Image (tube, rainbow, N blue to C red; front, side):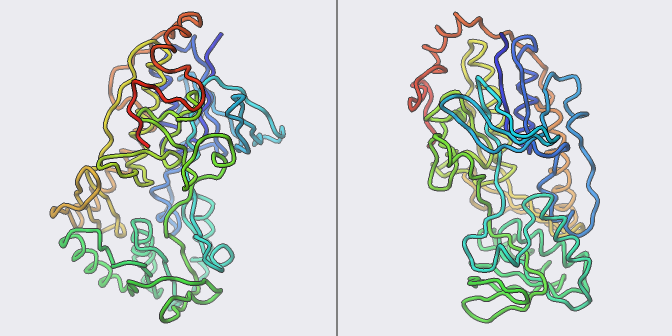
Length: 414
């Protein structure tokens, strides 16, 4: 009987994990199903580009996974029963709700925008955490007249990229950015200086050390002066999908699934969580930030650990660390801030057109990695051990440990 592996979500992490598992395990031994609501891969790191009218390359999953043995099921996940190993989905083809059974689950539903309970945000603000939101913002921006004010709320990477992309594409608009903290205050001196220079050249007004208290139809209220806004873009961070927290899986206060160093759930060892959905501890015992840079390595880690446990080999434990923060500032400018392993800025930074090219290479590389999940490493599809042997092996590796018990051989990361 084939071991049933279900991967929920086909963003950078879910699609990578599914493809990597298909290249690690023999096709006769496993059935891998990738569940996603949309039929093609969405480059989430380019949503600010989509929002201003740029066309993105279509990457259909049917072509991406052709010949791999991965079955792509178009459906929306509506519930998980981790105790009985089932997932409830709403079929995209109108077949209604279905119950899928699994032996191993990879949870990669990721995150969406975070309104942070600020009054009026859900009703009046736009978000670019996914394609639907980016397309709605695109339509709204296209209807604006010259001189109309656009306010981007959030001074992190998403906010910086959105504000600069809008200002470069529509120089006729009055673009402003509102940041709760100092403008780019986590960057090096060189990085901060370049950021201020580019924003000044693009004519973007910056309101730093300013907290937004409410969003209205035509303005953003702050703890100081109201900021006029024909369009408000909310980019203050992400919140995870609520399905995990509604299940019996152990989650943190953020709703992320608590995992060990191999991305396996501490409460349900047959469940692995990756990307934004997982609470992963990185260098310095700090939780990894929600990002593509954090997510893809967790997908590699989980896929390799699953394959190892099913084939009776030792699960790898590779440290996940940071090297850089890549920020696009429109199509002509960029900022590559080099960082320590635990994500603190180093004095060194790359700026200008070369940085913009660097960021473009990173984005293209991330998309390429999804279709090539072993990153050039020779494919070796191992046979899984037989069920009777698997039970014995589970006692050694912890793969069959009761719910709530972590693998004693694995140092927990949360």
